[in-house]
Image (cartoon, rainbow over all chains, first blue to last red; front, side):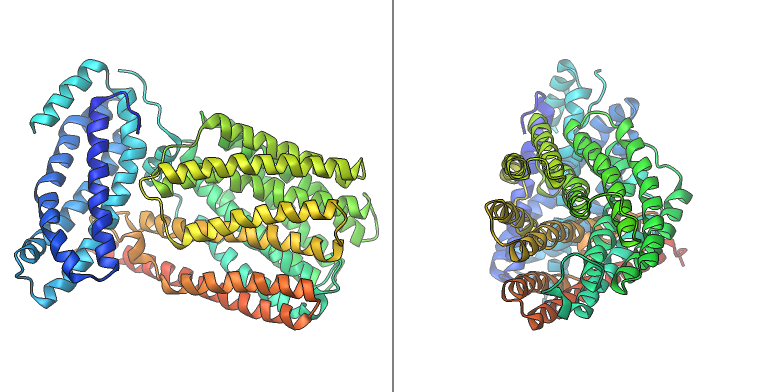
Length: 158
Length: 436
């Protein structure tokens, strides 16, 4: 992505990093390689506990309100709904991923872990798809240089 | 703050939720397409003995062809355009009653037309054609209103206008052919047939396939919208190619114009494939599975079709090469591409319909029964191969085998569709259930 805004570039970099992790999770699950899934669980826990909430909170508090003011409240509402769906998956998945990372996951938990990981991959990829193609180009037009600079600082400090 | 100016595919993704039609409106066209697809292979089975000696006249092979073109390809194009174009062009959804009425005129019309063709009843064909042409006129009007109000996306809009112009020529050539069968010729038979084939396969469906690919591929691959100037260049060259071939169909410098049309067509295809390749290379999700396999089969088939067209201009036997050209264009290119798109877009649309009123709606993959799609792919490729073999060997048993394998594939796709509908219904019932 060639964006003129720092915020868009930051979010895009994060999207790419998230997609890379999600692709690795998807491949490990498709190959049914249990060892790979356990090895990825630690990275996934970090992603679930830190990255997702930081990314979503920033968008909801800093980006969606000005979008709604500029007449793009429908997009902001749609993305917020998707955040809520993903948060619901994260809530179920996090304890299982943490147990898997610690090597303490029961066999019944493994099935649920796999199901929820696949659901997370699908929901997040679709969500990133919408943000990359709708939200980020919109930010390029929505933000001026000063607003962009301030938001970039705010995100770095979050 | 500057006014927002979104990118096309993003606009589609972001706006789809707010501009969803009631599920029954687009889905009835997709459902009809699934049924007509199976009926097409059944019609070919009924006419398998006639396949090798068929010269384009009334009979079950002609019925099979129209069950694919009108029944499957155009039904899907209508259903998809009713749902997708208002989203992509950010237009209001127009009269839903008119859309429902469209189905009631179009689908029975196609059924009657195909039955009339199969049983060689020209008056049935005329009645069916009247209903179909009436419905297509209304659809063309809706399409035109959407295109007229579209902002930006010049490449897609150019392809849309080209398809709309071709729809007019398709109607005129259809009237000429029906008049011919009723014993009142309006046009030379070969010219009318040539115009009809070019307007339908390349003009309406082909330009829609090229144009919609600029919305769908970036969406599937998570890629930027392809260079719009090149989209326009490809579309304009394709339109010139079709126009040249149409003039040649009337006997005007046929070899020179057909050769020029093939060169222009190859140029348009080259530009289009280059844009598709860049889109896939720049995408964050470069492999979208079986759907991409089918799309690649489609593009490969179009390359093959142009090579067959060149062979025809250079004097290859029309009997064999003409029919192989038809199989490559209709079955290989258009049908393969359509099924590639459908198996991605239908679960996506279903998940959006299921999402209404739900906090954690089902994902597209949760609504998809995947295994029949794998069987469908195998059957689709095998059926086309067998049909090509039947053409080359002039052996009716191979045409029969092609019809049976194609029918099996169509039923597999039908299972995928039925399960999708059932899961959508369950998801919606679950979402509407009051909390206990």
